[in-house]
Image 1 (cartoon, rainbow, N blue to C red):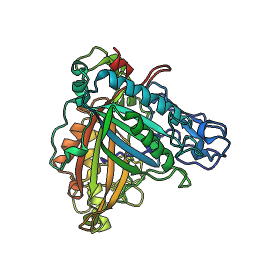
Image 2 (image 1 turned 90 degrees about the vertical axis):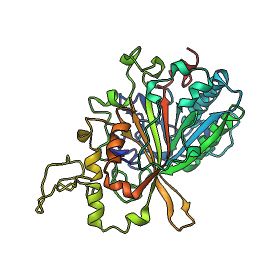
Image 3 (image 1 turned 120 degrees about the vertical axis):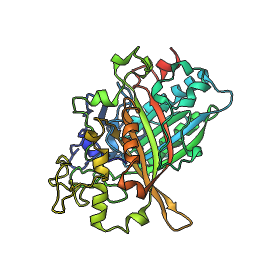
Image 4 (image 1 turned 135 degrees about the vertical axis):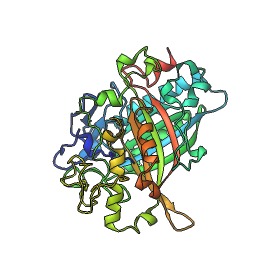
Length: 423
């Protein structure tokens, strides 16, 4: 939950559609040249929707095929599921390839609002609802499929951090799937389809559920708030940035370079962390103290140094007390790219709430997902810096972790991961 986490600041596909949708995307709009992912409005006769009239939120379709997989630069959806699988004993490269073929066929159908094979009927009267399915490979996948020589160096284990309290049963995994949609039934339908497709090849290792603000809930697109009430994501990299592709996606030019793999060209690396927010402790702080922990005003996300939400941080501004206005240990200061050698990652999270614990505290927080061309240059240096003195660390706990190689998008006639599994 580093400072820049936002769907609004992707600055793409945020126009109103038929005057009713804020964050759902617009009919026929392509989501950024960097994303290579298209969005279209599905008509009343498309797929499972049949003759049912669809609102613009339900009709929005994200294209399956593209240079990059969907769900990376796609605007944040209202519902999300993260699920990791381990291959069952005896399943290897051949079985994994067959599974990725099934998953890709299912994703293509469901993202277009059509039923999948052996459909459960959960979403028969729903449209695509901005559904995306994104597939990745964990470090152990390469050992279990005899592909160790093709494992990227970027999948080396993440270092330990002092704020970690990781549960290994809810961390890592051979395979990882991210599901997002603007309708809860559509998202759950996709989750069930993915699980059914995996039967006999892989079993669920862990699964987590998340949410965000619903599409069209505000009169205009706004940066999301997290469960601490903070505007969260102001400084997220934008696909319109000149260096966005270089920072977020593995470039074609990387083919043959040391530590890279050709099959990852156009792909990205996802760091996934379940971050528990200690909300009872946080909510005991005064508004002034909360704002100093973050380094931004709670009301509008503007930096304490002044201006509006999008005003750059003035890290040198001194207050009447002779101290920097943005404290030295403020989260916004420590996580700022200019404080980390320009290190950047695209944060695309979901909030979560899994009930009330036996001690009466909420099991709630952030399903942190960040994307970068190289986690050793993106996530790791920023997290190390936060680990050494972030004021926010007192109020959060990292409870699970995963790192996954997410290959580029499938071309027409291909399935996701084909360039790895059939090379």
